[in-house]
Length: 442
Image (tube, rainbow, N blue to C red):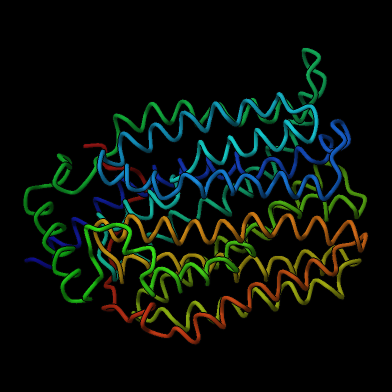
């Protein structure tokens, strides 16, 4: 009886929440990566060098990381519904403000503002998922949420090129400025909807039966006891907890590798001489492969209950993909195939990775620790574009940047290899549950 109630509760929660969170993250991720497409004409219009563009792209993460921990602590206190709604509305306004870029200084300032406005969204949702789904289901639902990353790259690749081409010159506004305006609007609208749609925790969900609410609350409380999670109301203690620091260092390389494809792929493909439309279509292929790998790999991890080697294996695949791109840099199809392998590896690694923090941290420590891990990772996201831009300016090519990405990915694998199951414990094997495709509205 309890098993049936549990499966029904997980099914209803996933059907109600996951599709909506994916939609929110797709919107956020598009606002992050569309600068890669805007750069195709923006860099020349406002006199941005490759190094300046890389610095501006990376400074987004500086703004994000400065406000990430406070944001997660506020979310835990006031609830996800209110705080995620606030985040979305402010980042939509900040993204629209990118139309005001007219040189390196305004580009840096507005990218920093966008990062500050969006700060806390991603770690906030990862924390929010830990309120709803037991450990044995967390990799698959983290993966479904993270599916928004490749999906957003696919959508952005097709939509961004089309918007820039179709609206270029309309009302005297250049295509890349239209791009920021058009793709910022959904964030503001969805931010308003979020206020009314989300439920903070299972106990607040009127769309669950009393038995289903109790099952989720009781199961998650028992999980915290069995896995002996670190949980302290003194939130500063999570900063120096070994699990937080180890996972943060590992995520530095993972997040760095994750930023490489969307920020630079449009420019890499464009150097091959293709039109904006073809560039967009080709740039959509690696994240499409990554999306499939993410879902399949996370389900494999859940079904086996094994985390560590699933993560390390995916990281190795990432490094192989970037390494293969070096000799194939002048062969369009082989280059895209290599980057597709890199995307498959890094997306698979990311989906398994974000199931780990909530397996070793709980309560206020989870709110702090997840945010700190994200902060350290965002240092990688900030560091990567800056270094890649500088390398490209010096070498006048992409081969050295590919080697750099492969090395950074492998460094994360080495960290996880030495950390072992202390930060990537085995969890119970997950059973099959039905996941609704459409939301359960009642």
